[in-house]
Image 1 (cartoon, rainbow over the protein chains, first blue to last red):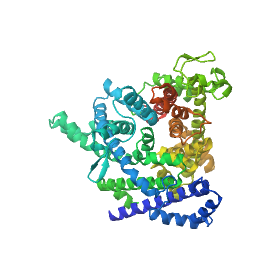
Image 2: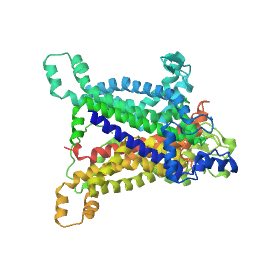
Image 3: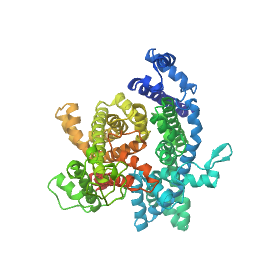
Image 4: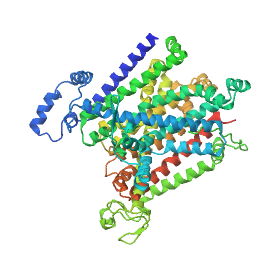
Length: 325
Length: 303
């Protein structure tokens, strides 16, 4: 087990290292580092001073090591717009994004699994067909478009829910969060639902496929033959076997939720990392862009690694296979 | 996309594989409807300069007096704006058709380039085998562990705006899907009898790969291709909507929707909604066609 975890850690390190090269070269070789890293308002003298300060006159490999050294100590430079360290800005916007992503994940599981269960148990009922058609739409419709429609319907036309911002936040444990105030909750509803739509469709499909497969298995037949009530067979025997893969996949989607939140945050003016990124791109605030990219890569690698390790704990076959190879 | 197993009755023996494929495809009314819709969308986009009442990007034909007219209102210069007009007085119907041209061109171009690169890399991996194959596929798996939209967003963040850059970002974010599909199919095909026969004939490995195995990978490739083109169109629209995709000089549907967004809160819904519906119609109909193609082309679905 330890060997397995160490091997996974090594792989994760290699990936982060590769991505740091890609991001670094993306900024410094494909793009024009002077234009990207130095504020466009700088005059000639400032620019030359900045080139020396940033070490852009040094050979490329030395520059890369300097970048890595900075990144390892959390120094990605200062934001041109806010004048604060880029990393600090991103970390200060992170709770809003995580709150949105976790709420969306919760909605996806809470809405998707029951609907998928129904569609799997009664595949021929018109309601199930409606659910499945809805999930196809959920996959095909662009997230930003659905977000616009939600704003139009719920915020402009019906005026039920606010369309922009985070609302009042309260403190829960150590976090500032919208989830503990009424106003905050009303603000998070639309963005969280918008972000969750794709994942609701995914949860519906996974659960439905799992239920349909499980219903034909011997253990279900046996449980029925024992005379257990259908409710108990489904809620205890079937659900137990389906929930592990469904929840694992949904957990794996957390990374993509954080990535996708860029779109949702922009539409609903949600003050998270994603909106910060888009604003930074539009205002050519490169230190923030670079820091965001490295952090999101780290996030993904971490999530993938944790899921892999959890998997190997839950399912010894994965671990044994790796060791055999 | 759907995993409903519709076991279609096998049609009477058709003469050629293509005729059989056509017969099976036309069994689904939804797919045929989607194909017709898609055809209409493409034809309208291609014919845009000849069938629209105005060229929305010719300043001489646009009148600011017509700005923000609701749908069905008559423009200053006489014709009816069935879908209304946008913030600068462009007829939305015309702007949408012109936007469709750009959206479709970018989506199809990046889809086709990604298809070629991905197919080549996937086949090459299956062809050389060994360590090179492992290395290539590791890289493909690595890339696929990030969602395509995030990869594209990272790239535009680094590259900046512009048609060429968006196409590059879409290609880089999508090629891996083709590579994985081709390699998986090629590995299955490699052990079939016709390949053994070709090896016995003494044909070169490259010839077997490209002339014998590649044509048999086309089914899965077409399926992945349709879905990927739809997602490329949708991704481009998303990036353009966020303001990091195409510039204002290349007004695709995403740019149109973004331009209408500011009017949305004041109740002028049509400036965003109609371009959005056009996008929706395109993406959903491509997906429905692709979905049915998968059922028809997938031999496992047949009984």
